[in-house]
Length: 413
Image (cartoon, rainbow, N blue to C red; front, top):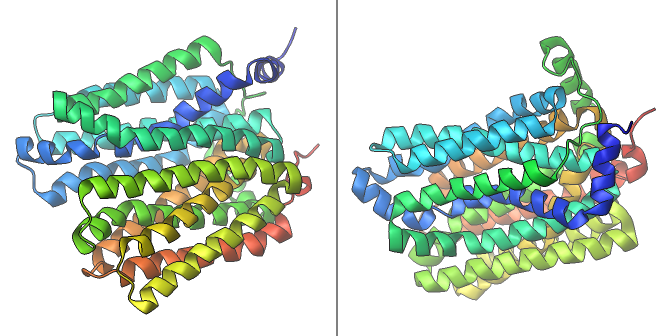
């Protein structure tokens, strides 16, 4: 009789395209959740009579719930398996999407979006853990880069789809669409993707063993190296996502169509970066790929700092360095997310969740910082991205090179 892990590995070998599609849909729920409803925000605020600050809480509450709930969802996935936690999370996600669409007050909508963030966390944590279940870190990075290429396409399409739906059917339909996508993802998962966890950990949720696992992770040099790379590289991307509309439209005077073109260009650059990542992995391995990606990220940071110092205010002087940063992020993100659980195959859910929590915590802090720092000029935005570019390159060129080789990340006997 074959084990669950053997069946899962056989499935991955037999239908790699289906696996990558499932991973892309699960990870792509993040831009679906955050980007698809953005064009609907003005109509939502008008109908519910909500001021801008409360309307923005529909996103902030989701991000906070997404980050914090990972600390519980990761151990849950190690205890009960990926499929059951995924199924529960996607059902919660779809149900809260429907409730969001039916909301008659901004308070109800904020609460529903926070619960939707919990369902999103289940999808993202389990997808990352599934990669570690099935592959060693170097091969997992290649598969993750393929899935993140799909995420890039979803991120490119989400605001376009959201705009069309909101314009033709209203903001409630845009929110409901996120639930339809989650339901379709769940159907594919249940029909085609087997359980990938080899053996559930009966102690994963017990406070004592869980705290001991966290201590081991936070003291492991491989985990530290890759976990620091995750929030550094994502921090720069989040700065771009959180501040670019203000910068390009309000400060630089770009039209909304022009801003959409800038967003599309960055997404395409990111997608190209994931393709380059796979080539680098085949030739240079994990640490070598990240080292070369770091040089791209550093170049972006230098260009951003130069734009700030020189006072350049042309949209190209901002958009081009951001596109370069997105290209480097297409290398760092798949490598870091695949490698972070390398030393802990029996606790992959917990490891990916802890790394994801740090990423969300940094994103939340950057959002708070930008709310204070953005002053109607380009300088705070450009320097924030430049600093995060430098930090990303520093971690990639030091800690990852010292501790991030695949041989150090293999499962222990």
